[in-house]
Image 1 (cartoon, rainbow, N blue to C red):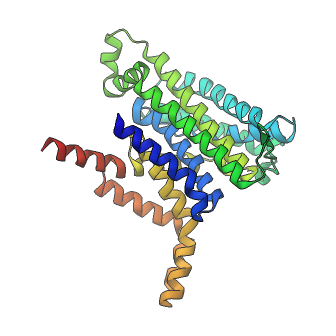
Image 2 (image 1 turned 90 degrees about the horizontal axis):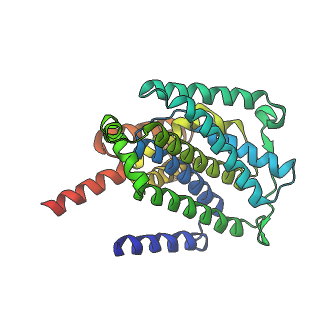
Image 3 (image 1 turned 90 degrees about the vertical axis):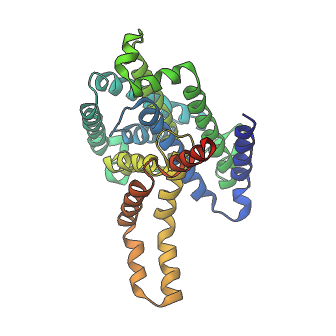
Length: 324
């Protein structure tokens, strides 16, 4: 317990110090938003064993709901974030109520189908402005703190991430979380013990959707926009990739996976330009145009060398050494 506390405090200190180390706050905020999104998805897949191909619907839906509340209805910033999270939770309640009637690949396909319905609704709905997206979302202020200042917003986003992470940690460590693990390992045995598995699945699905929505609403605040890319099936695939690369069923794995994916998306072009200047080889310029291919290659490498994900594999090897 002391080690966990020390590690948590060290992580908080690192997050607090990053802006003063010359790291661009917007980049770190993007990582934190995607990390919370991946952690929310991991709660469903890693600890409950339910594979959803539709989590982008909650991420993008909350972004649009938050943007609509702030731009059109004039909500305060905190109320806008809460509204976006609530909308995502309600969407999760409805979609989860339908999807949990099936299991396995059928569950995954139902979530994908409903997410695509949501995407096409956003594409045609007037308030989303189609492919242009919802732009110029005001950041406003929270408790007198002006969020137009990137540094102020950074610490608000960091606090939101920490709170969301804490909710997931507490849920998994609670008796509720133990039941979810039992469902993942042997659903038939959980039923024989008298648990209402559908109710537990629905609660887990709704909680995961709400936290994914909180991440989406926060991202809309950071980038002052909500676009269709937040609700596409590719976004659902991306969060699965983040979780698997980092480590399924681990607390820090999705955070590591989100950091790797966002780092590649944002920094591979800079690395390519540096290599061209350093070596004079123009081939490196193609790296910046092939981010998806590079991420795919890294995923293949992780599947072959790190079956449990990066963090999962490290924890497994540390456990083997302790038992040796």
